[in-house]
Amino acid sequence: MPDLSIIVVSHNDEADLPLSVGSALAQLGVSAETLVVDNHSSDASRDVVRQFGGVVRLLSLEENVGFAAAMNLGIEAASGRYVLALNPDCRLAPDFAAILAERLDRRPDIGSASGRILRASGGKLLPTTRLDSTGIYRTATGRHFDRGSGQEAGGRYQEEEEIFGASGAAGFYRREALESARMSTGVFDSDFFLYREDADLAWRLKNLGWKCLYIPSAVAYHRRRNLPERRRGMSPLVNLHSVKNRFLLRINNQSPAEFAATLLPTVARDALVLGACLTVERSSLPAFAWLWRNRKRLWAKRREIRQKIRARHLASVRPSP
Image 1 (spheres, one colour):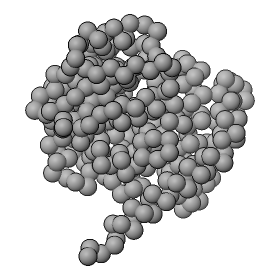
Image 2 (tube, one colour):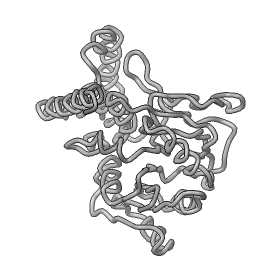
Image 3 (cartoon, rainbow, N blue to C red):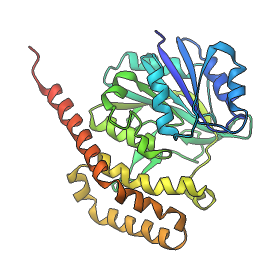
Image 4 (cartoon, helix red, strand yellow):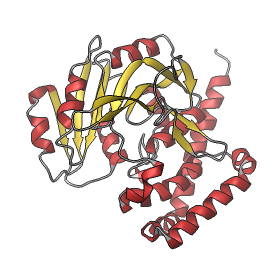
């Protein structure tokens, strides 16, 4: 059994796969398997993966099921005790996985980890001097952002510390933690399709009692496509799922106490989002219809998650025999 399963979900990423998959295969100091789940690409992505030969497993899907569902298929097919969810436009330093695995081996309470991810540039994913992510943080109103995103890297976020969650660009997870978070829609919630699924998993793991660690000596390089300030240039599909998923995040994870404590700013933000969808981003309006059509199933899923949290809490406080 390998120590680590590195899973890349691709969709028309033929130009980036040689670098991301190549960096996965170049990991030192850890026994690893590499899987690529291809989400029905129309370019040469599958041929690129096949050129690596038998050292990379290829799962070819006959339709685009979305990032979350494809990653779930990769997790099910993998066998490592750790899982690294790697974006195809992210390149790892050779010791990235070994550093994180060694640290988590010493901390069984850590369910996930994030390295120091620098912003990458161009087709060769060349490093820049700016940060891309040092993990996810959450605001008082439930919004989530990548720590340090866009900031000059020098002197910032140099200390190991506990954080809210790992960025999905190169999220490192303990399999035991992922299995504890598994639900009817998968480890990653397939209802998200794409965008914000890493924040949802981070919040769920936190509610289940798992900690997340930021380890700055583990370095990666990511060419980020979607940023809040680029919203108007993002695809209508991404924006639609972004709107839908901001509500799914709260349905899945927010406690009644958290909702009450943040009611006014949250409602104000929701009104702003709805207003934008009614005026300048009408292509995202179907998100609200989807939420309404699926409301009973979504609330049933919330009950499923809350039951998992209660059961894990009871197990943690139950005295040993």
